[in-house]
Length: 82
Image (cartoon, rainbow, N blue to C red; front, side, top):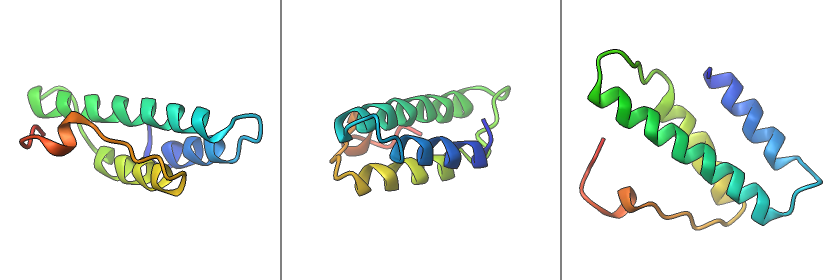
């Protein structure tokens, strides 16, 4: 997925009037988990590029902060894994 596609997908989630904040947070957290998995895979294999994945995570994290999600991952408080 391209960096711009992530921006568009995040905006689509945030602007979806059919979803409440909880559903938006769930969707964004799912995206965040997928990007973190991509980043882990990129560090473990020379076959996967992590181009823009860090930037994608920043976009997703900002959107979660905007929704006051308070998202916590085991990777956020533990030793560096990436």
